[in-house]
Every structure is written in C-alpha cells, then in structure tokens.
Image (cartoon, rainbow, N blue to C red; front, top):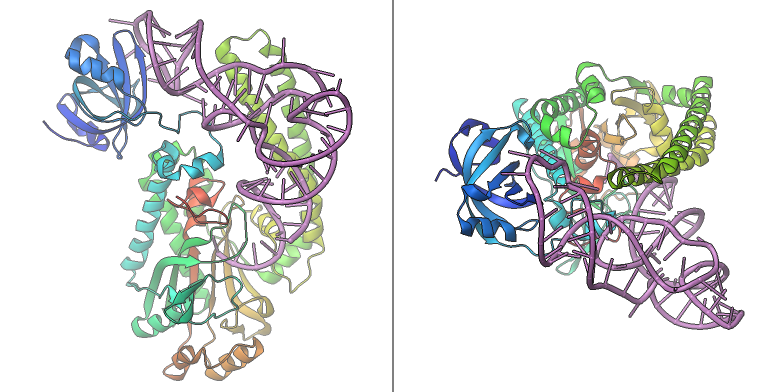
Length: 500
RNA sequence: UCCUCGGUAGCUCAGUGGCAGAGCAAUCGGCUGUUAACCGAUCGGUCGUAGGUUCGAAUCCUACCCGGGGAGCCA
C-alpha cells in the first residue's frame, strides 16, 4: 500500500493510500466515524462508513480515543467540507495503540497545566504551527547569511571568566574550576571575524536574571553575526536587510501556519515593503518628552475608557439574553463573557499604568536607558521595526566604539519590533583601538588579564568591525503573534520551570 | 527583592457566612456528513497548607507555600 504524508495528499487525489499517525479528534454517529488524523505533516479527516469497512475495522474505530496511534487506508477525495480540502474515505484501519485519558483536550486549558504537559502540548495545532514557523525562521537565517558568504562558527558555552559581572550568569563546576554558562558569544565572534571576515554564531545563551515576564527565558537562542570592515551604518543596513529577508520568507512559505496562529499579517507585510525608521537616542528622547506623546497617551486613555464602556454594555446585553438562550448559545455567551472579562482586566491594568508611562516618558532624562513602556511608546508610532542608534556610552558595554562626533555616545544600535514585541536586536560598532579599549576596561573595573586574548585582536591587525545579536525566541513570538516567548521554544527554561 | 492577581472535580471555572455546583473529559446509551459536533444518563471533591474568629468557614482574619502578570535587568 502506498504510504503518504498528509501534506502531500493533493498529489494522490482518487488514489488508495495509507496514512500513519495519531487521532487528533473524532466525532461519531450511528453508522459513521469522523476521525481527524494527524501525522506530523498535517491533519486529515478520515471518514469511516460502517458498510465500507470490515466488522473488525469498525469495532476498532469504536475503540479509538484522542492521540491513539494507527495506520489507516482509504481513497483520497477532494471535499471542501474537510480540513485541508481533502479527506480519506476509509477502507481499512489498524490500531497500533489505544491512548487512554489523554490529558489535553481540545477545550481551553490553563498555562500551568499546559506547561506541565509541554511534551504533549507540542502536538496541539497552534504549538505545531509555531514550531514550524520557528523552523522556517532558523532556515531563513542560515540562508540569508550563507548566501552572503558568512561562515557559521560556534562560540563556547562554558566560559571561564565572567566578562560583565557574575550576577546574571549561571555558575557550574568545571573539574576543579568555577565555570559559567555563556551569556553571549560576541567576544568570541570578534575573534572569528578576524579569521574569516564575515561570520555568524547560532547557539544557546543563558541568563540567570530573575525576570518573570512574557519576554524572558533563562535559556534562549541567539544569532550573532560579526563583520570585519563594517561600520555602524553597514551594520544597520545588514540588520534591516536581514529582518526583511526573514519576515518575507515566513510570509511566503508559512501562510498556513500563520493562518492557524490567526496572525494578522498586514503589519508584517509592511516590514517587508517599507524602510525601517532610524532614530537616534537623542531624537527618541525628544519624542518621548514631546507634546505629541502626551496627547497620544491622553488619547489612549480615552480610547481604553470608550472600549471598556462598550464591552460592559455588550456584557449586560448578552447576560440578559443568556436566560432564554439555547445550550450552544449559552456556551458561546459564557466564552464571550470570559473574553470580555479578560480584556477589561487588561484595559484596567493599562489605565492604572498609563499615568506611569506618561510620567516616565515626559520626565525622561538624557542618559537613562529606556524602560519597557518607553520602548513600547516609541514603536507605537510605526508599523515596521525601528532602529534606535547612538546611545549614551555610560549605559552601554565597554567594547562599543564611541561616536567620533560626540564622545558621550556609543555607536550602538537596537532594533525594536512593532506591536509591543520590544527589543529583538542589539548591536554596535566595536572599539578597534588597543589603547582606547584598555582605557575602557579600566573605566569598567575589568582586568586586562582576563581579556588578554580579546586585546590580542586589537594588537594584531585590528580593523573596524561591527556586529549584532538577534534573539530568536522574541523574533518567533513577534512573527507568530504569540504573547509569550514560552510558546516559541519546544521546552522553555524560565524562573521556576526546569521540567519537562 | 518589590507591586499586583490567583489556587474549588482529570481540565476550565462559578460559588463572598448557612446542604459542594456547571461545562468539558471519562463511562454507558442515542443520532447517516460531523467541524472544539449534538442529545440523555452515570462517575467524579483533603475547596493550596497551617492556625484563628464564629453556633456554623470554600467564603472573614493571620502566616506560609505554589503559580500568573508586571517593575528592576535584558534578547
């Protein structure tokens, strides 16, 4: 029998084929079973009619439960009523195993429960789609750099010295020594760039920050290109081309997955077609303190209040209706009431927070770093990512080159994603001069001895060079429209979560 | 570390001082095209833990534990 994957069913119209997979869902009537079978490549509805199969096969169909594994044979027919447009008219089926009491139903579940069952949750449709988008992003990243002559090289995961303070590093034993898990491959990337010119690293990084937010993991994946003979402008150009390329590939090649995720792609399309605004830190500060920003925030308060009033009105109406409603309508109303309550909670939190955002923005002082709300406010004015460059040197790392036109500034750049997804890229032109770099180490109370190999890079044929780091999970969250990075990686590691 | 919200059936939740509830799942039955199918029945409880107030506590008070969201920090 011809074994096929569901993704390829269209090539086998009217043929007899065999699928191997798992029961995603099933419905039944007296003489008919509708089995939704998933095989990893997709989902196909398989129709078992009592008079089309043997008695054994019919009895077997009756025993199937969610996630039972099976082989199923039948004819591929086009049917617009079915998911994917094709279904299988079943002639035979073999049960491999009956799964009893699969914990994750197709109904709603809480985050904690789903995280406890992450190993199973990955089988669910939205998670399946998100992982395929993640894969497409990874493929696009490699394609982009490989096509431009970049060499992928790996930075070590164990490091002996804590480069920039130990508070946010994980410590571990390394034989008789203290070792740390890497929080960035960048310094090593610079060494690699001096050997190969254009390189990128792609690996895990670890941060022991006690952050419990939707944007943080303790273990996440970072892509760090490093380019010899690139200045800040070239760095920004590359970062913009890079993100545009990745977004375009995902839009082109994963429309079905984005559809499953119910991602509104209109804003993503602007990222592909429009230039990213470039704003200096100084300009960003001006924007935050401006009259327009204050007005925008006042308008935001009004909009939220209006929306809340509308939602409360709707809730009153449907609560009245609920009394005489039929059962299915009651369920619908209950769901809507839950959604409304969640949205109202969010609005009320926003209304509590907006005065703080407003104060933070309007009282912003040159020299401070942007807070989460400041970043959000800056990106709200655009539909594409924005590049914010030339930050005060005092709030940036020692290795960043200063702006020759203003020594107070570092030639740094951050890319902020739209729709509140925050910083996805951080980068800079690196300090190339040996004596200046030594001076910076001294200013930061860092020992020259620890960085002796790094200083060698400036001693032997130093050149201008730049690079940046992309956070993979934040990128996946943005493209998928997910509100938490925990759904962007198969097994997330975060505060209080080490299993499964 | 701080602020804030929460912990009631396998799951999602309602119940704010007076008999422990609903939907889903599971089990049994019904239904010839279902789309989170539907309909009927059955099963299902250490109300996070410990103490206190009260004639009486899921509900009020105190402490603690666990989790969500946020601040700081950051990709």
